[in-house]
Length: 314
Ligand SMILES: CC(=O)N[C@@H](CC(=O)O)C(=O)O
Ligand SMILES: [Zn+2]
Image (cartoon, rainbow, N blue to C red; front, side):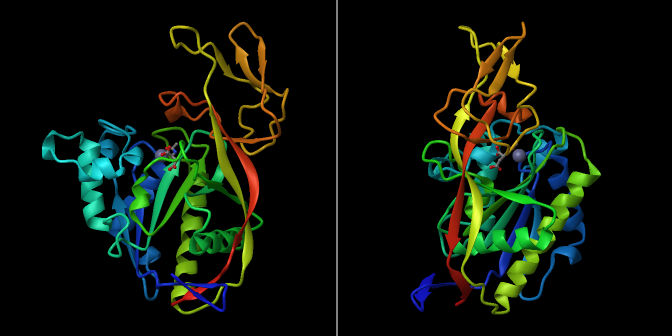
């Protein structure tokens, strides 16, 4: 990337694109779409782009579980990607190395241009695109394009560039990593509305890449994002056992403002635990099934408007 006219960012054409499904083996919309498109890729091909659909964790897909040994979507750290040990390593670490060889190496000029990583959540989040970098104007412009293309349906953007809460995702191997999280959908279940919402977003995302590669210039824009602030755990006793549930007033209210003093948890004997933070936050991933093991009841976020410079192909 370099500069033009002080403010137009130039990016190389995005010629190599991948769509990952089954980074988590029990998130069925992504698994199903990736399998479908691996068999017949006509729907995901665009002029001037090669798009490859790929099942990221086939062993977990086969068993319909999130992972076999360790969470693949946390496994792309420099330590894991460079660790020796071959087939003595946890399955997902071996798989991360393999994915890094095929689609990376992470951080190198040979890496894929864009990876879309398809996920489903048990939370009532609707369609959510996940970014890891607030400075990537290519991705921000893509978000702006998708939001406009699917209106009046909505699609929110979650920005995870938190110094401690950010994790090393499968998609992070690409130059422009894009997560797509759609819910609510139970683990191991396929819901037609969720499947369809995911499919439509991918269509617009690929259209954007085609237009970009054809030389279209995208003018500066602002994109509303929800920036990850804090992880909130369930209340627990001294032995680490959960002693309260997400409060009924908060359950299913992803992206709605949570104010200091609002109900947050309900104990088993009916007592309310209130949110005590300093100001209004926007909770998301509320009561996500996969996050019980991560000691996370929900994430708090803050609304921000990010500015994307104009972009065009170098
Ligand atoms: C429910 C779920 O798996 N969510 C994803 C979010 C992401 O892709 O960043 C994860 O925790 O890896
Ligand atoms: Zn997932």
